[in-house]
Image (cartoon, rainbow, N blue to C red):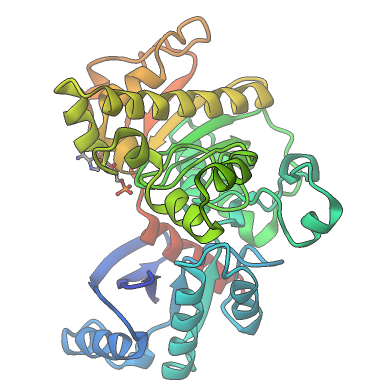
Length: 392
Ligand code: AMP
């Protein structure tokens, strides 16, 4: 089965083509376009390239196209990318302005160009569908909540992959199987011994999720991906009263406040150096105090959220690091886990040197395992699309 994953940014279009059979999968081709103003010519060029290179006998040789949609109004999960999805994306275009209009246009282009090819949307919020109202509700007046303002959680594809892979690594095939079937069958009931995982997706965009027996019980991101940990140049958590206060004190209109919270905040805002943690740690090592502040604030926020989920789940069996920072920054991982030996988590300094590969980085006698699991979001989406098609 050939599955194309379309990654649509506001000015870019990237794709990966996988061939999937049973539990094996292979990346056949990947590519992309920058400075995109219209998706249709890019899709046409991509299909031509894939055909010329022999990966497809014709464009209709594709079995499905998968879209990593971010946030839909009144809709989540892994679903057919039909009119319902377009409506849901449109309903929240103000909340995800860089992503929702791009995905809506991309889905329409594929529908017009390849009407026979199945289109599947995997929402980034899908992994959090089973949070309880107490977990997802903000304490707001009903009229606000009726607009759909609540916690949603994001990076669902990545955290779900961590849920499945960590269960496999910890010898819990029962939990891994539950995760595999989650979007098809729902969580059902589960009586076996608990498996409590805290997953840290740390990259340009970062979030921490609590995962109990393969099902998420919460995430650091809320109504939008602008909450939780400090992001590359996006705010993360902020007390809502700061916005009217800054508006009055600095005389800023709401559009400018939104721009600064999205573009000039996060690690960039704190460090004044860069939105990339490599530049920030370099500046910190050279003695820049603002860079040190940004690095330490990120670590503090990771510990804050991980601790919150540990408490909620009544313990933690594994702490997982994934994505660019999580996979490649041993110093940050060691600092996140510092002083936790009384809880039963001790990092093995040698094992912790691993970069970009899967490894257990805690000591063998550590009760809580610390694990690095590399993210491969395109492949994760392709696997979910395959499961969706097979279930259909
Ligand atoms: P991502 O969004 O997952 O690509 O992650 C981007 C972040 O990961 C940036 O802040 C980078 O500083 C960090 N990162 C990526 N690769 C490395 C690396 N090889 N060493 C250290 N940090 C890295």
